[in-house]
Length: 69
Image 1 (cartoon, rainbow, N blue to C red):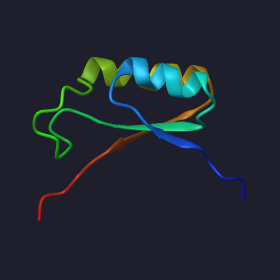
Image 2: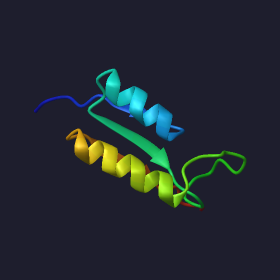
Image 3: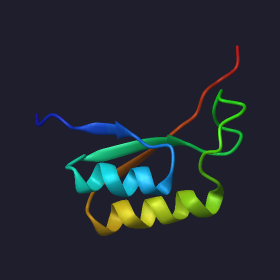
């Protein structure tokens, strides 16, 4: 089994940078899907762009979903 280099991404620019420097996959949070209330992360359009970029480069995009207990 091959190890996967996974990098966090807080913006589309971070996705591009992580992939440029060799990440196999990136993870991010979408609107209303994370615990960072003040965060200015991905909207749905940015998530689509990040997914397209990862797909184009043969990489993976993980979208984190936090649950509230």
